[in-house]
Image 1 (cartoon, rainbow, N blue to C red):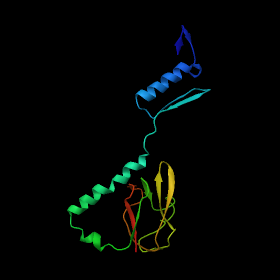
Image 2: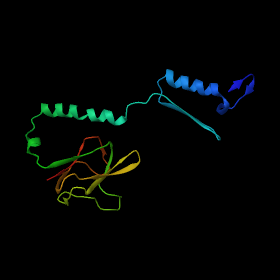
Image 3: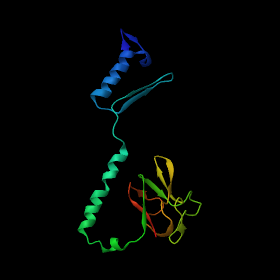
Image 4: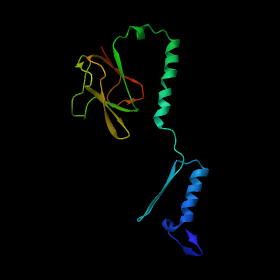
Length: 155
């Protein structure tokens, strides 16, 4: 920053920090981060609602679209459905070299790990809430999944 024809480092300038705060406030920004070798300045604005709030609304349109088509097949499906608790990528096994956690026809107990969903570089083990036999797996290894999307059916 130039002040009185003399260069002043940004980390020593309170006016600069106040100006950054004003920019954040006036432009409704989430945050500004400035780093140097010696200092890091973070100015945060208003908090935005969590990103997981929007996907909770998504299942409603799918229901209305299903209502337009006859649904006798949906009524005939028996068993319990495991749905994705988060947005991410579905993995059927702990690593590419390992066998899948479960296959169609396998028996599972409540609490057993049935898959992994990677979200934001975190591997989240998904446990079955139900005991029974895996009747159907709705997604393939590596497929993206949405919040509330059907993953598998347990009979």
